Image (cartoon, each protein chain N blue to C red):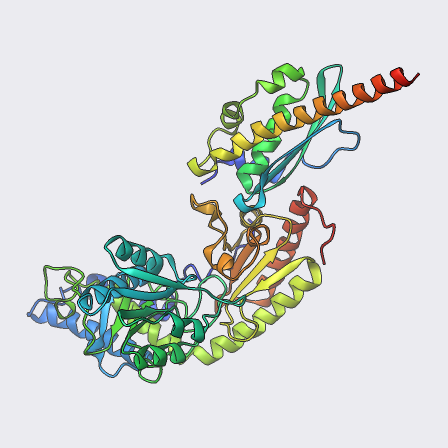
Length: 391
Length: 135
């Protein structure tokens, strides 16, 4: 059997055993509807309360009632962008975001544009950083919301969130951040960072899929997402997914508890991986910020070859990675993130995202690099693009 | 998303690589769209004796060019020009909808290579005519 190495933890992570143990009783023993007032319901409600407390603590929210459970990061992003924009539409209809946001934010903005809102998409520099000067320049009297991601999902660049939030508040603007890739990778303190709204997700931090949350600071208005029940303070109706929420709460607690040790481990794995890749493969570019980055995600462009074919050759040898390119979707253009960073199309097309998990071993890295080296060699041998004139 | 046939051709393309002495070379596509295909032909007496390729692109692009080379080997030039993306697609069995353009590009690469062969012939003819005139 082929060895299996999973290097796509930015896409999703396995549920950790601690988390699974937290979830299991919620399926068949503590199965009440958390909205029911009898003992079964109260038990379930207590589980939800504990998860809410854990998540509030993980991000240092002032009050647990500022955590609204959703089905995941995309729902939280959509809700935050559309719900806040709508709630403040009488004040203004201009929103600022960046060109490198997750599609959940970008598409929510496009939907608002169709309704008559105006959206400014800020450029980024070659490392993927939003410039504060550009942001200040984009602010208008009718700007109501700024939404900038904390950590980019493709290249791992960390934005200057605190400065962006301050800039927003100096101008009386609400600040939302998509922190799906940041939770567990960087310290998140919504009070210290002055964040008004923040999207997070469970399955990126060894929790189950189907759970996420929107942190919404008390006092910030938002349109209700789902009518029909008084769950989540009447903002998002529907019976709560108690097992997933319980798992998410535990996962968030562990993510913060183990943040430093995980990042230390991932830093050494990253350095080991990069040194081995550079030793074996020429004509590569490491994308993202050299320092201001999370440790688990490495984006590399391999010149003269295309990303999806690299991905498939690795997959045939049991190594799972992801392309940054949109080649797997029906958009044939290279990734919007790499484009915004000014990376030329031909190089952007040859980009692979490697995202490491906390359980990776050096032997896994050795195997992955061996397979990668062979794949790159094989594809370059049949590439019509030549080395002529390359560094 | 890819069937086994596409994957196995992609993994071991028989016709991958350049060709010394090719007398028809066609290149189509661009890096922005993610696919560049180059087909090399060796044509003798109007017959395609050999066909090779080099491709920058996804699995579907690499498999499509390999199949295109297989299809036209041994064919008369006129017949090779009649090869369509449908034939490439049928041999592959199936392609995801947004990858069908790869089979279209393979058809175009064949035509571009044959076109190059004719251009070379014409150039040679002109050169030999000129030489004859001078003599």
